Length: 606
Ligand SMILES: [Zn+2]
Image (cartoon, rainbow, N blue to C red; front, side):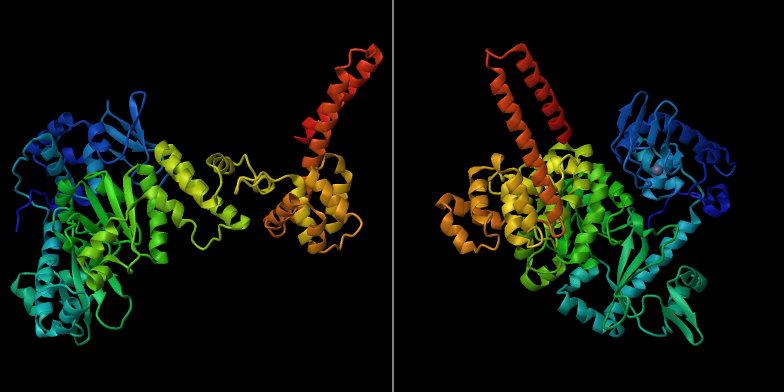
């Protein structure tokens, strides 16, 4: 086991809290003068903007830098870095400190680990320290000893059922099982664990305290009893917790270690320690949903695959990934929960402006299932169907909506509006691609979709002027539709047509002439009275969609449009009259006054 240069939390006292102000640490008598000087030297060599900038995207504002805070979720940046004084501060959540504290917080590591990491970066070698971080050492050692115990149990008689589950149902080889250090926690009372731990110098109390064992009246049982075990390592490759999958019936299907100082699900990614190394070559990290999925990806050669321990990626996860690569491949199950997780993660992804492609698997539920059912070629092929995440996002939001209806389109546009806004703030090119995808789905021109999002265009106007098949619809098209489809509004539609018959198009006039005397007219009779073009238009109008409950609004809208048209026509006619040179001064002034009045009215009608 690798020796680690860490100071004792217990003996250090002041080191006991991860949030302790690092300034105190340097004054502590428990830290050697040598380390104190080392830390000062280290800080003076590091550029805080460069270090923080490798985790978050910083934007210069005067002497300072600004970013979306990596420690809390926000939409406008309130996280500031002051390079002159060497500290960061978030006005949103109060996070603040120097470059060491930042690395500690974002990586969720100890002071000494952060120092060691930064020293590496600055090309300095750490002074040799006699004191170790006893707590961390003890914690990881305990977990590594349990890893070994679970592993041996899986290979023993007690683990037979679990072993055949892995090899038969999951199609893992013995090699895979060894490679990923999978194990099994025996079911029921375990009489062997006590002796096993004692031989290795581990106090039983420590296993109880850390929740790996539970004491019962007759002995000890494992928290993960009856489960296949996935050891979860931190970035340094030390085991800090476990994931357990039940064998046979039982709830929950998956169980993780409790969160602790060294195990935070929101900051850990399964197989990240391996993926990090591989990502240097591949240039991307692939995120799957489950442990078996991440393993499946490794088995087909995608060695930079990880799995989140939480339902969706957190901002901590993304910071961690962003510190290694800018490119992500997200693999989502085809089911609803996958899509939900996708949506949650996207908010963070968009904000961070990571380059992300998404694969949704069509052939099966998840990578593991595809690999075991169809083999590696099929899985590899499925992975080639990755789409840019903005395109995926546009597609995801259609779920359950019928985009051939106006109400479906409206719902969809409302759902997509916020993503567009977010995307536009972070990356205009992606926002454009998103807009194009959405426009394609609703079959509207980009401008109309954008206008809808901006709130400048209400849906009613779009109903009145659908752009769908390129046919610009007039008010009377809607009046015809209302007349034909709503017995309640039939009379009203007719009276609007009557009032404005002067400004109706030929189609509207013909229609009005036929129905004015017989509002109960049949469609066949109507068709027989109209010319071929008019009949085509009539049938098109019958396909127009009007939101249920919106009929009255549409009628009012038609009326307004015809009023405007009438005013415009009157103004036109006045203008023609005004061109007459023979008008008297008196006549001219009357006409002009009338024109001013009508213009005002028109303006008021907007
Ligand atoms: Zn914050």
